Image (cartoon, rainbow, N blue to C red; front, side):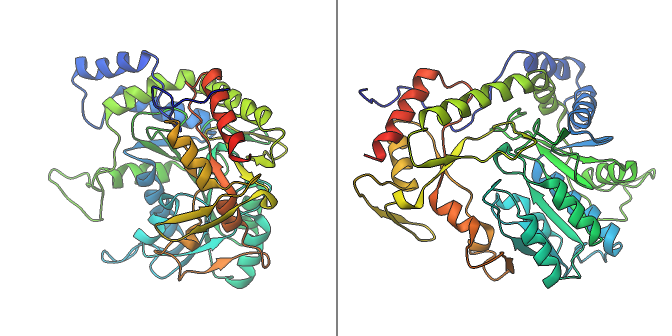
Length: 407
């Protein structure tokens, strides 16, 4: 097959619009509900709670803002209401997923907490329950765990939840990438004491931005809603007894999300087809696709793989630069990503573990043994173009280009 660059960009994951979105956006315009209240927001909150198995949802401006309010709620529940000048977790350690996007744990730092990173397991690319159990033996005072589900593929969140219960800790479940996925019959987002989902522009359904906080506790939802609107008290004037935030979702953005929800299952099926084509196309290569646990039904948001270490050429990554030495029959993530870019296709490295980030290098990191699993997956892993609008012909070109990297 002759491989030529695509005339149009093949994205990692881009929004897929259907038409209903415009209807609900126009409804917001026609009724003049253009601010942070309106029927679209009400509908999105109802849908988010239904799809996530939680009683209450609060629509917010981003998933990061939802995570921040989860952390703040958890901190106040555990340690009481802080002084105005201090965060709800001031000086408290919090166990966090290590191989994730920084937004998962930055809110811990917003509230004065100290993230302690828990290594990844090879079987799911998510937090290792065994490493978490070890962490509680090292830091028995910890009372909060933040667990992220990577790329839409569930981890052993039921075991994580059980460990938290035994140690009297609360669980925040970051299901930003896993909306619509299930584990052992339960939706991702349903396991945490507090949970979040994302509607960012590249997620499985999108509003261009936005997120939702999820809880079974009405008091949590009411408090989050209050904080998200600058914590205004019910007084005749602007009365503030707490620090608040401008975190509420726009009714216009909610219109886009509302129009996306009927297509969530459709998007998951399309993403699954992308994953399965990659898996079949790479069956003769020394690679392993995203692992799927028994009982897990992913949403297949991003397809990726790791290269067998025996077929890795030498790759040297610094903080901002990377080099590699080409070897016959071997490749590395850098070569594959450069090859995709020459094709006008977007790939991405696996999330660089948080304990390797300059911001958090001095924080605790708990692993099971000598092997740093997250660092190893980062070193050998690639996220492939996973757009649900990519044609089979286009994907076959990408598959062939990746195969050429091993030649």
